[in-house]
Length: 149
Image (cartoon, rainbow, N blue to C red; front, side, top):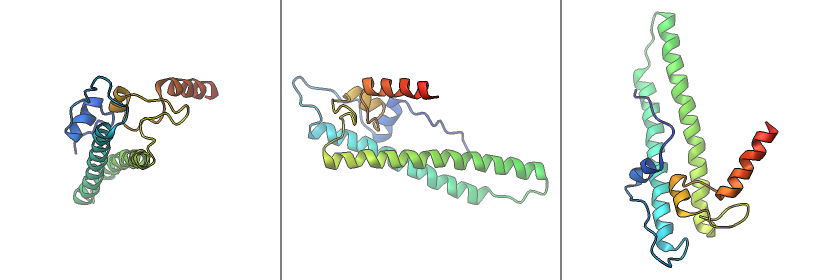
């Protein structure tokens, strides 16, 4: 199985959804219907892509399981499967974050910081569609995390 790059650039996330970066028009209202549809499409496409990857891993493990007589070969295969399963577990957690973000569309909170309630910004959301903090609050949270660690 090919190695997967778990870190997607914003261009990859946009290309998964088949959309171009959003072009803001002068005096356009933040998080209008068009922008919400843009981000909803990105999030749903991203979620579907991850789900397909998870399902293909399960199929791969079922199809590629061999009972090797050599214990080293068996251990290698088990380690490969464990690595794949850990990656899929991370992706399941990402799906939960995507689903939580999609729920924000119903409450009209998408695009606004959970902490200070200001606009997160279109560019930041295109780079990280599941962002729930503005750049200032995220920076402060990272500083606090470093101080605790």
